[in-house]
Image 1 (cartoon, rainbow, N blue to C red):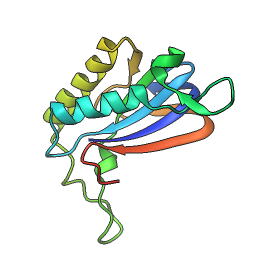
Image 2: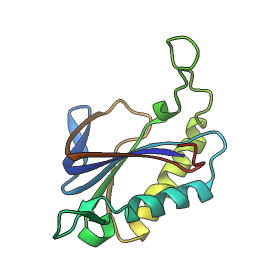
Image 3: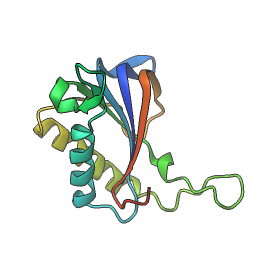
Length: 149
């Protein structure tokens, strides 16, 4: 699984001009599911995301996690994180999981975040969404459960 994690002061996602998810201080996570991914990959990413020390402490050092600050989480499914553009100019998405499996692991990931005590909001799977965010810092971290980067 792959994730783009952005520290935000606020973020929201709209579908058909209606806000379906929004958070205040916390993280926006764009989440992609690959062909070979499983619950083990999701569990790894959940622990990384909620424990990433990317929030400032009283000395302005990034020492605090989402759990430490009691921040909020907005998780949005994004299969394009598996777009391969090494050949040509049009992305190939063959490494992305099929929609049914991707949705299952996406929902599993969201549920694991909630079980960890994090206020978690979502977008709508396999739908055109408009995402707005105020990236705080800016801070953006790339995660891959296979540790490819």
